[in-house]
Amino acid sequence: MPEPTKIGIIICDRWHNCAGGKCLGALYKREGAFSLYKDQEVELVGYTTCGGCPGGNVEYCPAEMKRNGAEVVHLATGLIVGYPPCPYIKQFCDFITEKYDMKVVIGQLGVKSR
Image (cartoon, rainbow, N blue to C red):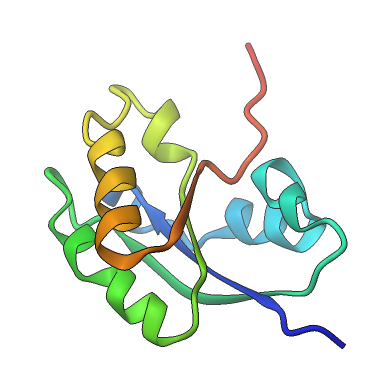
């Protein structure tokens, strides 16, 4: 049996009290961006906030996720659908990719239009 794909999730600090129900539900059901792993085993090895603007925790949390085996970091949907959307998301993607050599996926939930 192949090794599971190990992932980490970083959420916006505005949602720091979130228990992760939608993220974990989408992961379990392989919905939204987690449909990338439709026929794969997945292991969540990290879940944290960005640390608040301008995202200081993003400098360090991917290192811990990588030590735990993470290959992919999902930047939670709340970073892009919040008001206002995160102004640092491109920098987060570039930084994590360049410094930690990890794939970054923006979002994890399917976003429904209103």
